[in-house]
Image (cartoon, rainbow, N blue to C red):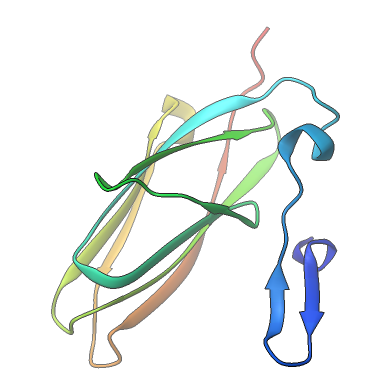
Length: 121
């Protein structure tokens, strides 16, 4: 699925380009999810369904996704060895999840977590 969004450049390698939700889902109904990241890191990047999530200074962000089906929250973080990070989806209730770890000697971690949002009527 991500291959659909990928655009390759000779100098910079693959770059992801996500379509807007309106064009991707035909302007239909979307559900709002709340994402929170707690990390003392040099680099912290989040994506939902391949689209970059802009995280505020407080570590919070909200993203709209199409209800139903499965969605992917992915991340890449870099921090000092021995420090921890936590990534959470705090709302809606059916999408809640918490992932985190402690940085090892490599001082880098990345991951993906799947979640779903119910359709509302």
